[in-house]
Image 1 (cartoon, rainbow, N blue to C red):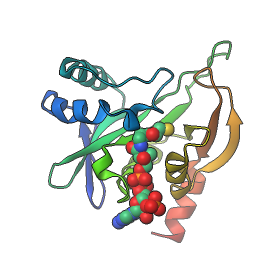
Image 2 (image 1 turned 90 degrees about the horizontal axis):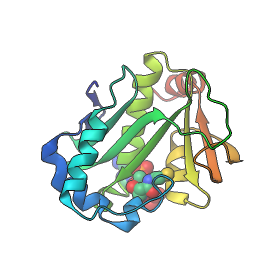
Image 3 (image 1 turned 90 degrees about the vertical axis):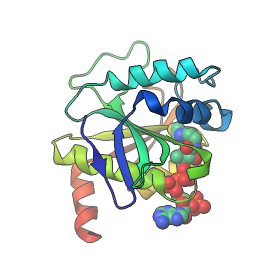
Image 4 (image 1 turned 45 degrees about the horizontal axis):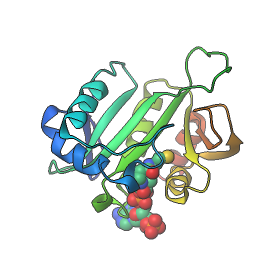
Length: 185
Ligand SMILES: CC(C)(COP(=O)(O)OP(=O)(O)OC[C@H]1O[C@@H](n2cnc3c(N)ncnc32)[C@H](O)[C@@H]1OP(=O)(O)O)[C@@H](O)C(=O)NCCC(=O)NCCS
């Protein structure tokens, strides 16, 4: 997995040394409550270590699960670009649909880091040939939907296609992304 940089941030693979930070971040209900189909807080540091091992298993030229740090190396959160689980009964598609997702430590909310990290990963993925990125948020999860809007993702409405539940679906295509970059380099 490559290291990706932006103006203020660096995205790199998770490391075992990050377990204390990950445990602190994901033991908070306000951070995990909208993550995945069965959100739960971490209860033990060992769970953070196991989760880091799992994140490091994503071995793909474009996809990844990155630790987000500031340029001085301080950890601020997680950024994922991975195939999205389809709801039961949905036929598998090839190539898989790819979702982008973010969660940051509350000390790093409200300063633009989620949007900046996601934009850097989108730039990288589209430059490498990915043809579509989606994001799904819980209905009414305004902070995450605001990130999607800041990224210029199109809101396609509600869907039950993913995670066996109803989600708000956002989409970004490389053509839109490149047009936005040309307009605001
Ligand atoms: C969703 C989440 C990542 C959003 O974080 P966020 O900090 O609000 O989002 P951004 O990084 O885009 O920051 C935007 C905010 O930073 C402000 N900001 C301050 N300085 C800024 C700068 N230099 N550049 C850009 N924005 C800046 C913006 O004005 C905006 O504030 P506002 O919301 O008051 O208008 C965060 O709430 C979170 O981690 N939640 C828990 C996990 C979660 O639910 N994840 C999503 C699951 S679908």
